[in-house]
Length: 61
Image (cartoon, rainbow, N blue to C red):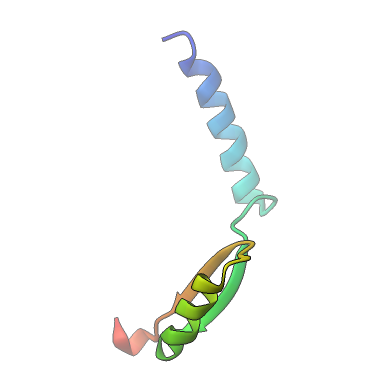
């Protein structure tokens, strides 16, 4: 269990970077739900650098 304190300090450091905005997700593309076919094609095409995001209108939730 000696490694737990080291892991905790790394987790705290990463959490601090996320909180400060220095670390975050890489988004490759954003597609509305109505255009899900294009989102799927972008994913299949490959060459993705980040995540593909599909936005859902609040009225659909």
